[in-house]
Each structure stands twice: as C-alpha cells, then as structure tokens.
Amino acid sequence: MLENDSDPWKRAEDLEENLIVNRRKASENVSDLISGKHILTMSYSSTVKLSLKGSSKVSILESRPLMEGRKLAAELIESGVKIRYWCDSALLCAQKEVDAALVGADAFSEDFFVNKVGTNPLALCCHEYDVPLYVVSDSTKYLPKEIPLNYEEEHDPSEVWERAPPGIDVNNPYFEKIPWNDAVLVTEMGINEFPSYELSSRLKRSLTEI
Image (cartoon, rainbow, N blue to C red):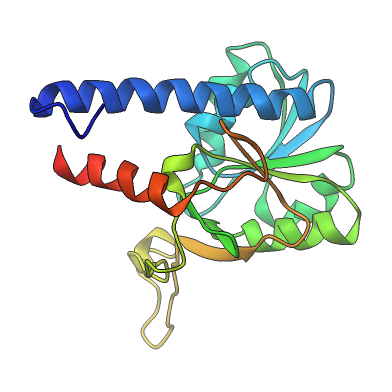
C-alpha cells in the first residue's frame, strides 16, 4: 500500500499510523509477559513506556550520561506506577529485587540487538541470576545481516565530564551490541519472530521514499 501510493504525504501518514499500531501491539504482547511483576528497565523508549503503564512497580536505572531514566520515571509516575530509581552502578542491587527486565532496541538482527550502553551488563546480570530479559520493539527496526550497522559512535566527552583536566581521555559511547543469548524479542508479530528479508526491505524502502 505504501509503495503504490504516489502521494508522499499520504505514504508518510500511512507509515506513521502503521508504526503506532505496531508499537501498541508489541507493547500489548510484552505486557502479557510482565503483568504483575516488578520490572527493571533503563534508558528511554516510547514502546517500553507504553508497555509499563499498567505495571504496579518499576525499577529504573538513571542511564548516564543523559539520564534518560529520569524522563521515563517522571512520565510513568503520572500513570500511577510505583517507581524505584537507581544509579547505574547499583545495577546488581536493583536486579536482585526484580522479577524481569525490559528494554527497547534501536536496531536488531537474528544475532544481536543494539541499545543504550549499559544494556550488556544488565543482560549479563539477568543471565547470572536467571531473570527474564525482554526486548520490545516494532519490526521496522529489524536489520538483515546483509546490511552493515555502525553503532560504535562516540559523543561529546563533556556530557560525561565537563572541563576534564588535560591528558584524561573521556569516552562517551551511546550504543552497544548485545547478543541475544537468553533475551526474548517481542514485536507486534509475536515472541522471537523475526521479519522476513522481503518485509524488512519493503519497510525500509517506504521510509527512504517519503
């Protein structure tokens, strides 16, 4: 439908509507898995936020250096969710109290997903203590193996340490690659269902043609 419509504005509207529907369905699918559980999350994802709105208790890591956890906590508290807020270095303490963890994804393939730096330690803690880790995303973020992904980008060092003394190399990566291992992918398609290459290519063409 998107490809055959010659009106770019109509294609954009249709795509936006499809994305909203897909994200809502993905959040409904994961909500069924985390219902009634104390959930640990990090960073900020609109799909994660939507998935957690019906939760009774959520622990949130601050997610330095931009502190996206604060934004998520402030928005969830308005929905009546009980929030526990943790500094990143208290990950292990937070993880011991929860029933499951939930994060988003900036991109994913059959082999890994990409998310905010700090997700790897969270995944390792979940594996060590046998805590389920769910990754919720819409299928447009699927990346076939044939398409390379550059996620190792460095950002402004002053976000980590403003006016650091000369000679100190301050690193500020935003994203990292996390292997699936025990993590469970949840999309609008279901659980651990990866889009076909044809579907992914069609969706990405729709994005680039608008």
